[in-house]
Structure formats: C-alpha cells, structure tokens
Image 1: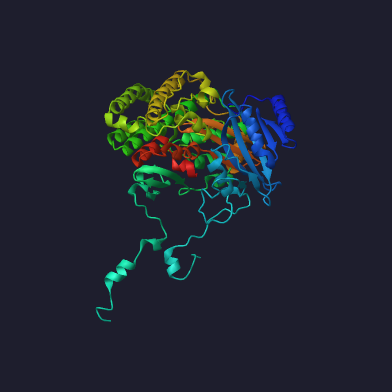
Image 2: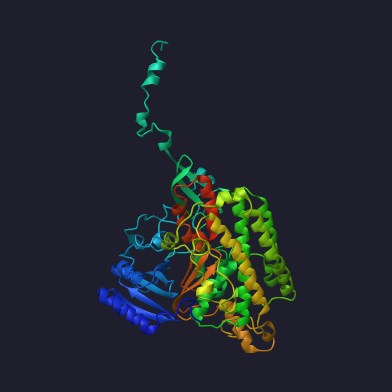
Length: 176
Length: 416
C-alpha cells in the first residue's frame, strides 16, 4: 500500500534530487530514504531554510505539514519533519532534520512559508525545538506559564495536581 | 477640617488625563479598542478566543488564541496499542470522525504494507461521503445561525439525523463510530442498510436544492456573503489553506481527484470551484460538494463488490467469531491481538486524505512495538485558522463572524 500522491521521485530520482541539493550547498543533505514509495531527505539543521527554498524552485511549492518527533532514546533526539507537495506533478517529499535537546536550535521557515507559523509554535510547545527567527515564538496549545514539553517521550504521563479554591482556602495547596 | 480648606474644585481641576501615560486622541475614529472575543462565545464554533483590535467597527488586527480544549490526544495515542488508538483519534475533529479514523488506519496500513479488500474500500467511501454531507450540514446550519437565520439550522439537522441513523445501523453508534479498522471495516453493512441509504440518496439532492433556493435567493444572505472577506489563491496557498476554502478561490485541488486513495479513482464526480474566493463562493462550493458526495455514494453502492470487508491477515485483523470455537490458531491470534495488539514494522508514514475541511494528514512513527511512537494529525482547521487575519483585516466585525463561520473551524481538531 503506497502513500496517496507519492509517485515521484522514485529511488533513483530521489538520489538525483539529493545530489543536486548537495552540489548547491556542501553538507546540506545528510541522508536519503525511500520507504513505501515515498522519498525522505534528511538535511543538516543549519541548511533547512535554504534547502526548502531550493526545493520550492523545483516545484515543491506547498508546505503541507510541519511536525515534530521525539526519537528517544536515539540521539540526536528531536526531529522536525517538513511535508512538501508539488501540486503540478502531484508529488510529495518529506524533508527532515534532527537536533539534540542540548542545542535544539533550528532556523524558522515561517518568513518563507507563513503556514509554518502555528505549526512551528506547536513543535516548540510540545518538543522544545527553538525556531530562530520565528515572528511569534510563544506556546500555542499549552498555557503560557507551563513548564516542560509534554510530547517528549520521557515526559511523564498521568494526572497533574489541580489547585482548587477550596483547598487554597484551607491552606492545603494540592489535594493529597 | 473646615469647608474652606477643602477646595473640591481645585482638586478636580488638578487632575489631568496625562498621568495615565496614554495618548488620548482628539479624533474619535483614531482610537483603537482591543477586545477579547471568546473563548465562550457561541459564534466561535467552539472554545476559540480571538483578540481583535477594532477601529470603530472595523477589524484592524486579529490574533487567534487556542488551546482551551487541548486534551493531549496525540500523547494518549502513544500509550495505546494501534487498534485502541482509533477511538481516541476519532474524537479530534468531532465532525469528521470517519476521516480521522481513515487517515490513521491508512497510515498504519502503509507501515504494515497491508492490502485493504475492495469491498472495505467502497464501504469506507460510502461512510466518509455520508460524513462529509453530515459535516457540511452542521456547517451550513451553524453558519446561517451566525447570520441570524435559525430555520436553516433545523432543516440541516433534520437530514443530519437521517445520516446519524444510518451510522447507527452500520456500527451501533451515532457519533465516533469506530467503524474503520486497520485492514478494513469492523463489520459488513447490515440487512436494510442499503435500502435506507437509497431512500436518503433519493431525497438528498432535492433537499440540497431547497437549501440553495432558500439561501441563494435571499437578498439579505447574499448581501452578507457576496464580496465579503475574499482572499486570493496565492495567499491561501502560502498560508497552507486547503479544502473548500482553497477551491472557493478557484484552485481545483482535491486529493480525492489528484491523489486517489480508498478507490476514489473508480468514481465519477466533479470538483466544484469558486471564482472570487469570497464568503459566497465558500458557501456555494460546499453546497455543490454535497451533491457530488451523493453521486459518489450512489456509484459506490451500485458497484459495491462482494467479498471480505476486512483483510484476511490474521496478524492484523481479528478472526471471525465462529472460527474461535474450532480453530486453536484463531484462538491464539485472537488472544495476541486483544492483549498485546499487532506489531508494526519500524518506519514513518504521512497519509493525507481530503476531509470536509481540507487536507487531513496522519503521521505515524513506529518503533517496531505494538504501540505507535508518535501520532500526529495535520488537522486542516489548525492550519486554516491562520488565514483568519488575512481574510478579516479591514472588514466589519459582523463580517468577521460570518467569515469565521465560513472557515468552518472545529476546535476539537485544532487543539487535539
């Protein structure tokens, strides 16, 4: 079963595309992967904005989705995926990058692709990837004063203590 | 203190507005008012808060603030085996539950490399298109409610009720049916379902005509919709907007047509597009889409192939009930599936489908275990919401309400 809309590039086409990107910028492409009929290019975090811009010139003019992944316990842990779409040839391509939790800085692509605005904010909120140059780098789904990044794999699940007014009045901060 | 010491007038005159540290304009029209719109406001179609800066009645700036119904479904999904994820994922965009399930099942099937039987694909199409009509009916009813027309709401919900009855007949549930399984659908459609569906298909085109007549010939509705808050195709594509909103601006982009999944290539249907990309086009595109959905369902029902409705792969789908009494192997498979669930080979897949609101993509990462390592929904409402400011800037606040309705955001999908 193939992913709908993923027919090109085939494994060879993907390599050619990756080589072109490599030629344009030394060290921009880290790895390529062809899985279930769809190509993935892994890029160096420093070159993501320029690489996406080059791919846009090649026809991938629509950024469908930007999402984060935590590869825990693998290192570097955090991943950001960019789903590109070529509407003319009806073709999809994934561009991904990996950063560590110690240096989670990635250049924001929001200036080039306004659609990434909310999605990059969500990745910051959920995974703690810092998008440099983002026009509005705030949390989006969690409260602004929230601590931690809940979608990380090592973030504990389970209930969080909730402060009720009645407990506060009685001097006990959290129900035990 | 005597009366003369206390000079009230002198104190009053000494007070200046300058101490407030704020420029107060001479001209009334220059003053901007920042207003919280929501989160508890019926016209926001959910728990959406919008921070608007108003210049009189004109919207100058607009910032959507979301997260009020964030329930962490993506995190919850990581703690559950694949087949137990379906019920929680259905509750994201609560008007498009079949689509949520389809995107997730499609993504897992891609990872499994599992073939879905033709009958299951057709049954999925029937249910998804019914769901699309249902979602558009809710949108039509609530949008008209925002414009001040209440009867449309009752008419829309009358037909929606028939669709929910059909869902109940095929799966036992009216909403969040969990009908789609990884590898196919839960059960074959019951006796009498086809007949009842045909009755619905017979009346639906006529009802759509009635809706169109009641609204499209109404001067008030037309004045509220025509030339209101248009946005050109290029800006929409930059903002990542898909679905009826993009089609209203004249881009014939529909994943069912361009990148068919679940046998959509077998059906003959049109992709309605608009011209100006204003609220009227957004309204008309959805009305026409309902007609096309009826056509798709008719073709799927006529051409419904015989055969299994779920994959025969016992590693993925439960064995039929009768086999459990006689086959030891079936019992083992059943036990393994119910206790641990099936394991999925490691990999990542992004499966996009055309939901009533646009591209709904499900990203699943598997680490080889029986629980997904990451589930992410690219929800169209979440992305489309970014276009609100571009659409509403410079328009009246009443038109902002109408445009929000035309966006058709579902907050359950936005916040997940």
